[in-house]
Image (cartoon, rainbow, N blue to C red):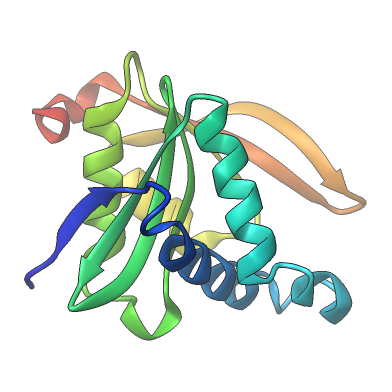
Length: 157
């Protein structure tokens, strides 16, 4: 598995946005209205990622012959970890998460939709635990906070 993780800047923002849009749409298609899913175009996601960068977030793109995954880190908050559906199950999500953990300035935290069972399994495997904190997104769907636990210290080194 050969890949590189590079910072996103103006020169590769459109590639990162295309990955983010395609992966976001695929991950939300089963529980969001089609009109809402289709709003998340590469152009819209480029503006979203650019805004995050301007506010101080680091955005990173995993390239494995083609752009395949993206993640953002703001201080110790990990967000926007997406891998293209056709590139999943190759270890890219694990590598992006390990990379993001190493970029955190304090104990890494993240929030996931409670129905994202695959992501929760990945995060738990790499040492994250559910904190019990929740944010209500819609009727019947919450976001849950996960914190990187000390038991995973080897992952950070």
